[in-house]
Image 1 (cartoon, rainbow, N blue to C red):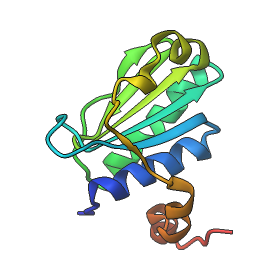
Image 2: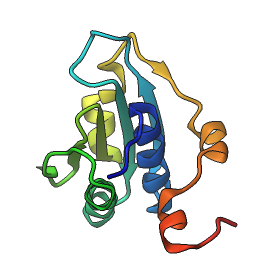
Image 3: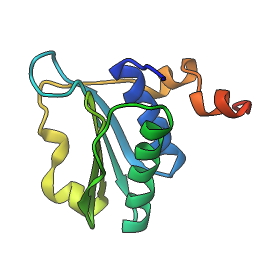
Length: 133
């Protein structure tokens, strides 16, 4: 069974979102005790098909690595995966603008996921023996 810290899981989720072409990616760390989870990953998609692909990839990652999670939730324009300590949202560009979800967690700190992902090995490539270019 794989074990990841909530931060590592949020970073892996961010990588998966990017791999599926997500837009406006944001990883936020929530202050301890302010929510039932520690991190929020927000992304936007160009279409419902892309939204489904993004959340499906995160869901499959959790299953593949035996991580706690709930089924994918949502419908056209807004879907999410609850990975217990990390919640991953994917919204259409229009829905994200309409609901202004980014402003829900005012006390959250943005994580520099680009810098941290450079240092974090991709566990799926380790499993398959591939190397990251």
